[in-house]
Each structure stands twice: as C-alpha cells, then as structure tokens.
Image (tube, rainbow, N blue to C red; front, side):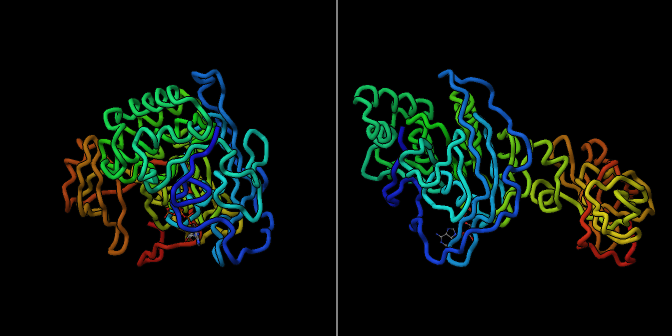
Length: 411
Ligand SMILES: Nc1ncnc2c1ncn2[C@@H]1O[C@H](COP(=O)(O)OP(=O)(O)OP(=O)(O)O)[C@@H](O)[C@H]1O
Ligand SMILES: [Mg+2]
C-alpha cells in the first residue's frame, strides 16, 4: 500500500505550501500529560468485509512547532481499531497539524505516532498506508478522474485492468462513474471532493484521514456523502480521523469525539458523554449551546443556582463556600412556567419544529436560553412573565465568572 502524492507537496496530499522542517523549532517539550490519554478505546464494529479488524492508532505526547507557534503541545489521543473519531476544535487549535503528523507530512519535535503498536515517526508518508482527503480538493489537474482514483494503485503496481476496475467501482460508490474521463476543472467542488474520497479509498488504507472533506458541499450532498463515508468506513473497518467544524456532523457521525484546544486534547468521549457530561467549561461551551448563570458555592461539590441546591461535579475544593461561581446549563436543563408578574420575561421565541427556543430575560444583563416542546412554548409568547427553574441534579461550574449579575447574587 502507498500514500497518495500531491502535485503541490513533495510528501503528498497536504495541499499546503510549507514542508516539514520549518525554522525555529523549539527543544523537545516536557511531558505535561500522561502518556495515555483518558478514555478507553472503542473498538470498531468487528471484522470488516476483508476479515481484518482495523488498525489501532495512538498519538503520544506529540509536539509540533512552527517558528514561535506551538501547533501541538503534548497532544495525546488513542483511536481504536476501526473507530471513526471526529476531531473538533476552534480554528488554529492544531487539527490539521495533528493529521499531517499522523500522515507523515510534518515531523513532530517530540512524541510518538503508534500504528499497530509501532512508532512510525521517521517512516516516510509513502510507507504509512494512510489515505487522505484534505481541506482543498488536491486532485492532479492533468489526470482524468479515473486516473486520479487509480493513481495510488499504479504506484503499487496493480495491473491496468484491475486498477481500472477498482477505480470504476469506487467512482460508482461516489456516483461519478459517468465522469471518469473528465478532468478535475470540469467538475464542481463537491464532485472533486468525492473523487478525492474515492482516490483515498482506492489504496484500501489502514487509516483514513479526512480534513473537513465535506465543508465545500451543499447540505444535501454533504449529508449523502457523510453517509457514504460512514458506511464505507464501517464496511471496510478503516480507522478514521475526521476533522470537522460542524458539531452536528461530529456528534451524529463519530464513535467518539475529541475536542482540541491550543494544541492539546481537552476531552475525548462518546458524542452523548461529551454533550451530557462535558468535563470542562471550554468543552461545554464549544459543543452545543450553554447558559451561564450566577450561582453560589455551598461547600465541596455543592452549589446553589435558580433557588436550588445541587451537585456541582467539577467544583474545586479550593473554592470557598459562599463564593459566587458561574453555573453552566444547557437550554434543556432549564424549565419555565407561566407566572404573570414574575422576574423572567420571554423576550423571543424561535420555532424549531418539535422544540422551540425561548430567550428569557432574568435581569437587564442576564438572558437565558430555554428549550421547550413547541406545544408548551405556544402558550408563552414574547412578553410573557415566567418562573424559571432548574431541571438538573448535577451541574458543571466555572469558578472564573463571566456573568455579572447587577445584584451580585445568585439568581
Ligand atoms: N506551516 C506553518 N507555518 C507556520 N505556522 C503554521 C503552519 N501550519 C500551521 N501553523 C499554525 O499552527 C497552528 C495550528 O494550525 P492548524 O492548521 O493545525 O489548525 P486547525 O485546527 O487545522 O485550524 P482550522 O480549523 O482553521 O483549519 C495555527 O496557529 C497555524 O497558524
Ligand atoms: Mg485545519
């Protein structure tokens, strides 16, 4: 197997002008995280069509430096055999760099990339057996669609007839068989992205790296191709890392989701765990909608908010009883009932199908978002007075407050 090369990148596939070996590398970073990331591996769905059971991949304490920018800073993450892992994080947090280091296009200044238990740092990209689809389309402009898809097979010295048959088969999968003789510039962006996917899959990679492969596509094509990717990935049992900006995509597609921040892993968990039990305020606010409400620490692991005392799962022991903290609550963790003359005033209602989102003003500077069944929300038009209550027994707090309640008191 081989990795696909790219016309703009000697190492292949990257679609970036820079090469590894950038200037200004810092010395090896000191270990700041345990060698193994938190969270058990989630195995794939068993042996694939070919009878193999996928390849485990582990990034251990990876650091990568560009001039004075530390793009990866002791980044550790283990991906189970056949797992589809989505990588989420703000722009510039190091997602693409992590994929490039995995693929061998960027050399880390420290750390390991373990593929099937073997450290492949130092192994050239061409020998890593990874398929890639990058942010740009990165097709060879001077080759037809069919030649693009068959390219990796040609490097592997697969015979012409077999190469053609396999490439056509993949083009059928991405519904572009009728465009096999066309050149990339004759295709739309979405079509080019599908060719790039077919090209990455043609070599039957043991690891598939997808860097926002769907971002250029319209919603319908995007949803179709997402399903394509998921079913092919499951059928072929290919360990896959999928970078996306689209949270819904990450939560609906992935076995687990990893959230990165400033070159490090912030949390990795199943989509439901990540949404329901975020470990940090950063994850809580990055994934899904979060309210911040002023609350008061009551003692170890206890907090008062919205007139109730509840468990605060991450309240540090260093926070003194009586201290004001922010309490983070999802819109569905808050309920409202009509109460004319009450403190809360509905300022707007957004219909979203079965659910509606209410914006409720609790004071001049404190607005909370509440999700309600649309049937209940229809009785609470803008201007309604409402009583707001907590519908959760276990909350996440941020002692570094951002809410400023006029009264400096919990609501
Ligand atoms: N070749 C390079 N030279 C200098 N800085 C770089 C290089 N490649 C990446 N960086 C920097 O490293 C950091 C991480 O970049 P990276 O492309 O990995 O981010 P990302 O998470 O993929 O962002 P996005 O979501 O915008 O694609 C950024 O600050 C970026 O500017
Ligand atoms: Mg990127």
